[in-house]
Length: 216
Image (cartoon, rainbow, N blue to C red):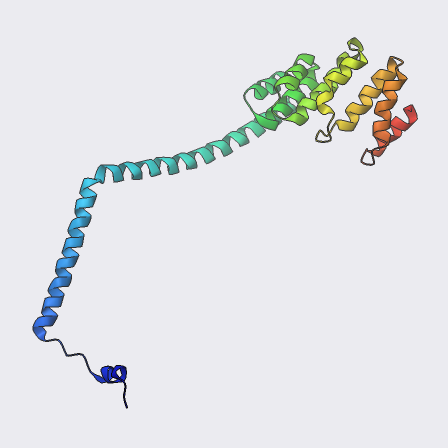
């Protein structure tokens, strides 16, 4: 016996008449017109806001493009200026470039300026105001090399304390410098403390470790 569901499947939906099709078409047309009218009303109501958003997006997009191009152009100009100053052996040009350039490039320019004119004031500026820790540490080592005779071993140790971390590429050089300063003062106990620190470190460079062992 056929179930009610099966019997319902056999029942065909009555065909729509021409007038019913026309009525459906009219409903669809009216619905589309209503939606279009609502869309127009929305656009009219918020047109100023929409234009403002579009304007802001255009400004931001344009600004980003200009910023990228300007940054790239500035980098090229800085590199060219640096190469020109090095070629001309111009310490003043390098110092001026350092004032107007931030980051590692500015620090490098200032250090190169010192290398040309041996003006320790440039090292002091780099040691205190350098943008990169590596160049600050390098400047401090050179300051000790220039003015270490006017400093006690304890002062040198304190001055180079920021280098007493393996994050600094000059960690072992600073440790050896402090040890040598203590030895120069005849303070073997403190010197050996620093020398042992280097000798017992498996990561210490062979040259510095060998020097420490010879001093020990």
